[in-house]
Length: 150
Image (tube, rainbow, N blue to C red; front, side):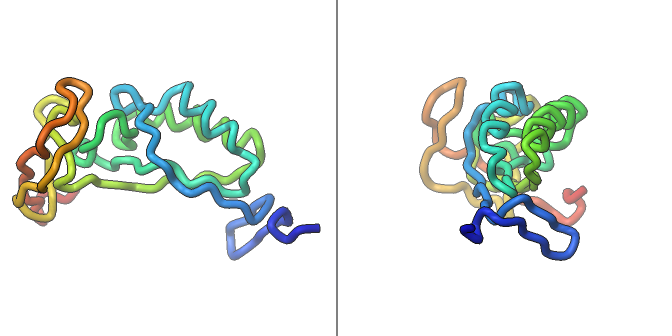
């Protein structure tokens, strides 16, 4: 039998095989909430031993791209539970990749009243897509401070 299809164990991690699905941003999380389409997508790939989610923002300020999922509200947690159930139904494990877009983003992709934050207040060159206005220059970020980290 091919080793890639055999069980893998290391410490507390026990996988049904050696296959790992790398993260790919799909931009399907309407209002940044994981949904049924995402549950279907990840569930269809539960032949892999381990699936790593697309980049998921741990805070609202990290949602610089349109329609990326978050993991900071009750609605998002409920959405991820559906997705996780679809993955676990096939016996796969599921790791969440946390991602903060930093200065690469636009305020139109953030919830109302949330500011784009980055390691500095230097505006990134280039443009990013928004659902509201199409391609736009990156927004001016606010420098994240130690007191701004929760």
